[in-house]
Length: 246
Ligand code: BTN
Image (cartoon, rainbow, N blue to C red; front, side):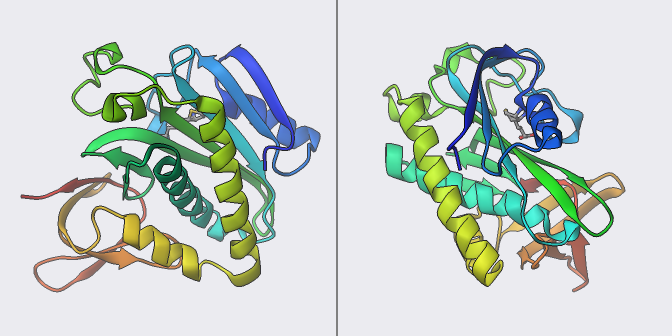
């Protein structure tokens, strides 16, 4: 991972470029990095603020030999890798909020967006977008996100070397990815659950079809969140926003 890095000053979205490169057949592990994104995208069609020079905005192209329905596992794998890299580089221990937000002290520092090009039975490529707030100061965040966002520098009080962080992430993803292709999702699931904020806690999951409140029991092999409600019914949550309930 990261043997070939396409470095750009300004792009609309590194995802868009990575999709194009993937279609052109670039080597697996190719990465697109930008200093600034003018229309960074988040999950659920949200905007991802990507100001110049302060963050890591990148997209990694993988071509895993697994069925398309297993692709969400790669999001969870990436979250584990990024948590480990942040721990190693900054000493901070972030937590994962299902499915793929990385939080420090309850505020979001990292978002992960996985997209794929696939047929019904075969993955052509998976594009893993990683956005990390690295060197923003707390006052740099816009009013819309200042209460829910943070950065590594805001938390540590020190500027962080973005190149070192990226290199560390590449190494962590690479070793977890090798493990995953060889032995499957088992170890990654266990690691993910140890870093997850919500497992074992009472949560509210807001889905498109309404809210479910209950105990977060864990995740399935596919990365689906299991929530047991007060009637003892187990819900499989595929897509939702999670809130810890008080
Ligand atoms: C989320 O939390 O909703 C996911 C955010 C993903 C942001 C990254 S930044 C690099 C890549 N390019 C994008 O446009 N989005 C992802």
